Image (tube, rainbow, N blue to C red; front, side, top):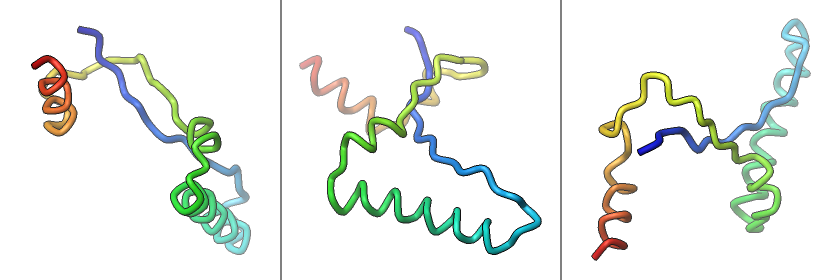
Length: 76
């Protein structure tokens, strides 16, 4: 079994000394996710999803139960 992580990556580079810019970036992140969920923009969502194959420190017991249950159902 090879372990890795499926994760969502979305980021904006900001000037941390510019609070208005930081807030605008936060709002933009919210809007990005809102649009994905509300309008079902799966193409945008696929762009944000990354598969991290670095399995350093990961154990099979780290896999969430709901994912294990899905796999068990498919095997029966």
